[in-house]
Length: 398
Image 1 (tube, one colour):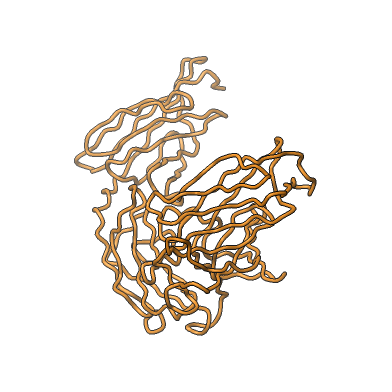
Image 2 (cartoon, one colour):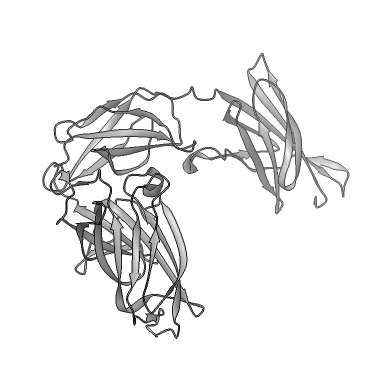
């Protein structure tokens, strides 16, 4: 992914998102002389130039594909006025933004020309052969407010002066513009659709991994990967018979591959084994929570009943929070050894929080935002349980 920003005169000009960041292709936008720009209401903006930003996302970089708006299995695709669901195989996409006279540019009196470089490794999924000069790629625009992709036309594939493949099309309005082959849902291993499931060697639940489907070195789709149960991977266009699933550790940058399947034919197998080389998961520890509120206005201590939340900020979004109800100041929760958690509670309309690491040695509970929540943790070797003693001060006891 590369970005470029500059001012373009409406007397005619060009802007190019360069190669770089592991991407060997560029994207060029050209405004023809005499073009006028319009705002969202279709009114011409009185200006002689436009402030322009172009972001080019390649088809072979994981970081680019993670930025694809809405994911590669959209549910809202407009083809000739009919909405459908299916899957994209992208050859690259660009985001184009323009400002003029303090307003956002939405359209033009003359279409702008867009040239997008295509990876030498990109395979045409309709033919299962490398893309070549003379091929065409469908073009799509994206509406941010609705999440809808609309089929706009086709880009023609040619070669530039250096022999690199480029796809050229015109755009009459601004949005994400996507070079993509689209496949609707259909019968297994028919024209449109099949699926596989991976089965891994990992038996304990772990989060933070993404699985991606490859064909000929090209990423087709992917997403969150359950390392215990594998992932259902939907495959559009079974002409791509030589496929592979790779799993990445998304907690690191760049994300390393932690396992991959052998090459398989999705029309002849439904479950593919995968060996994942993962670190051992943290040991689970049982924590007994003991909360006390020190009431300054009454010089007494009380044991509140409320929900307590433990947040693991390093976990995947769907497994970050553990909630437990604290009754009379007591609760029990299971956490991971050596992980730092944000411990928080809402009591009597106030937010109390602190950070705690649970393990076989004691550690201090440190205030982190909210109102001061302090305390200590201690590990009992006989019961193999941690006791968290937490205290907060309030002046609003009733």
